[in-house]
Length: 140
Image (cartoon, rainbow, N blue to C red; front, side, top):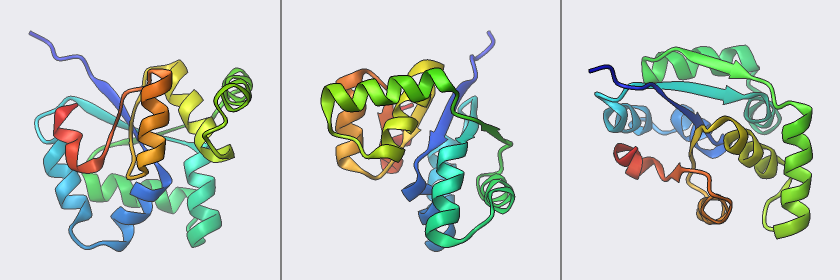
């Protein structure tokens, strides 16, 4: 029986944590072990990492791939997702600009989000996006 490959994206806080905390990558890698999952990063996360830590997008992709021992795909948030992000913010008013775009990205593409941000996890629950804290990634 073939397992369906799921797509997972990482929030900016998780990407930074993987870079800065010694055991973070090993723990997340262990949570994902045995799962048919691909890692997808959206351009918004890459831009936020560059703004906050000064790490170029290509370097971020390479490091995440190496740390998690999985291929990383980069996708760009499109205009319809930007429109959905604006509508979501107008309706719920609980996400800042980057989070609303990541939320719309995950929503339209059925991508699972991994984030430390508890408010973001709650927002995902409200709009129906699958999201997990890294310590709960084995539940995916």
